[in-house]
Length: 380
Ligand code: MRU
Image 1 (spheres, rainbow, N blue to C red):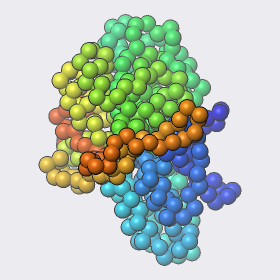
Image 2: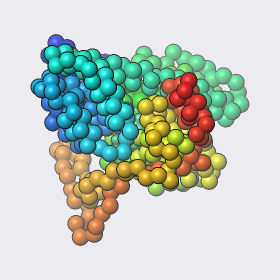
Image 3: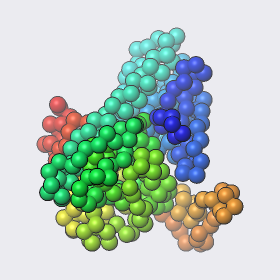
Image 4: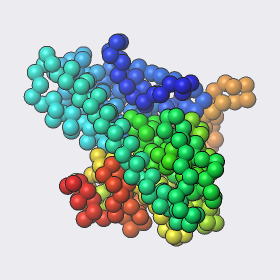
């Protein structure tokens, strides 16, 4: 933004403040917000000021610090309040379990400082994992693009100074057509993203890309956040309504689908933003590969397969019945789209069976969506 690189969450030592980009304000306003207390950290996760599986885990780790800064005896209560904010993304539990373990034997006079150090370490690790996901995934996109153009290696340019964009205009052939759902970008993690990291890295290598962005009703993370990130990076993209995905897939307008994930079962089933499952079905029906990109912290080895239930978040009806945006005069407004009289169910996630998943892209490489490959990946 304006020549400055931001992470989606960071700590400012000079003021002892935890800061976030408030994602509920994008794309119309870029606003930075301070999280000063445990209550504010919980509210930010619940209200989706921060969102995306990896980022809510890291925010929770900083939330533990904020709690212990006030009350060095408050570890257990902080973990329990943070854990209750959102139920589906396993990264929240992952980050809280690790934080609680790291602090278990810490004396009261140093526990807050150690919590802060641990949250910063987790944030740095998340950023490095996402960059590695991008590297591995970009090799996959390069192979797909070579196969598509059958013209050998694309002309590689230097890319955007940030290393995240601007495919070469001199590259031969048509762009590789990538479709993504929701926002699995830098905003959903500490930095880089997962599905979008793959796209940023491929674009920086000079692979010409065009990204189809699903709107992602009802909160429109695709339209509001993914399009915003792709614009910042100068990557060609088009916004489509969710129900248009089947159409573009069936017309041969998509070469590969890549999404993020909130939880992957030990058998390779992919839980992600509502609408991912029908997308994977349409991709499979049209022989278009469907990949999920995620850090290993998103794999829940305690979830054997989708035959066993996991908590699927249901959010408020207002997210469906109301729409918010900018009216002609530039003022923000919220409007009612539907009367309150019909009951609304607002399921936030669905599960795509492993059989529809062509592969899982992680920081360790790309593997098959099955029990053996995932176990091997975690072991190595
Ligand atoms: O409800 P959200 O916006 O938190 O859902 C986010 C997603 O479903 C993402 O695809 C997922 O968390 C992966 S983010 C790298």
